[in-house]
Image 1 (cartoon, rainbow over the protein chains, first blue to last red):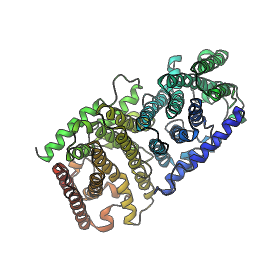
Image 2: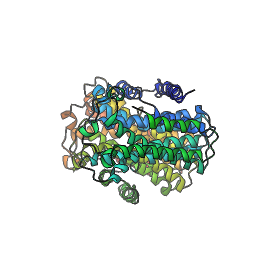
Image 3: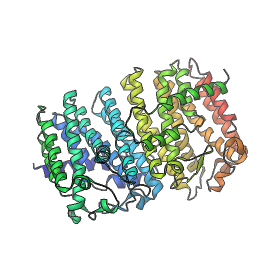
Image 4: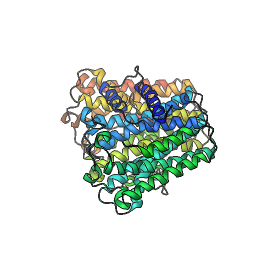
Length: 297
Length: 297
């Protein structure tokens, strides 16, 4: 299977699970359920859940046991997109060519759908740990890490810095804070949680973390590059949207060529962290790092 | 100690803990931290954390071990108030006489502060379980219950139904759905989590749940009654705000006298559930139920 096929197959597995993420028997107000489901099923790369699965596989773990955590992370990612798109935040009307959640369901329901998805992610983790016999101590560590990486010090902190930065970033370090927390943190957690599920030891989890930091920052710089040089049709959005939103980017600080070199350097560093750790089955992670570096959307 | 003194003393203990809820060493963007802290420390009855402590004590458990979960629940309650007050929701400029979060920090930061508090609550639970040697299996059950009671089937579902109901409720059952989920669910969880921490068995947790359902619905009906008949100075808000916001209430459906009788009936039922369960130390819970029934703000 090529890495493209691997991504496609796993993304479909994830989508099948996400379709039933909210049990049909639950007494949830219809529009809230629809709003949650709308954004969960609105497409996307499913990169984070695929990283969870690949990390578990890299350590010889079972994909089935990692799937519920993979879905939980996609719920967190989805909630963050719903809230980021709100008028008070980035004020986006479209995402991946579809109207954003609040354009369809209204702002109140969009805020609540985000809140509910965030909350539900923790439920999904506990449920799955029971179903697959993950030891309670390990499941608790996953809950702890998720709340750290997704919270004030992590993803939410990154988004807050991004909002505050609209008044003008002046240093590359400020942009790196945003990129690291807004994007990398959840990618790092995806890899670590896959490692946890597969019973990885401290050194293996640390290698997955280093890998995640590398591809996470590379991913975001690549986003900045594509916003300048990409193909609008493939990206599904107009070029130079960062500029229009007065968002400074990596190329703004160090130029396009140096940014490209940085993506390659980060990717190579990430691959080296994994390759040197004696994982039984790291091939897909390595391929994913290369795939992300070369992506055009 | 009178129940008034008991409430005052415990509310102060809770506030002391909440003041340090976000460790000073954490690298969190300043305005995000300030926004979280502002609403956490904006006063309020601290009813839910006090119920956690009282439930743990009722079973002979230690207050110290229950305190972090008590604070976690206050974080959840606080996040829900921040989001409920947003322009897209209830659009409130003041809460307890102070400007609401978004009036001080802007909408974007208010949304993010709510997200971060919700996320941080789960972190606090895991941390505390470690600190006080709560078995991992039990801590995981608390995480599971919190995500259920606070999520789409619980508190968020209640708030969604409340938003949707602004287009006109026609049945008492619809209002009971809102009251139960928007208000009771977190009160029920407060009691159950106190019971969990103290090592309560199934029957004891069930008794705490029944107690919580009774006082939770009574609390909300009492709110509806006070909005019609209370003292504006004590309430800290103008009377008849439900009417002005076109919110239907319990008295709207069954009248004022029947609503008062319902509060008493629910409170008595709650007390009976506890009294009949042989708790070693249920006195404070019984007193709290009476206190809430007779409150004037």
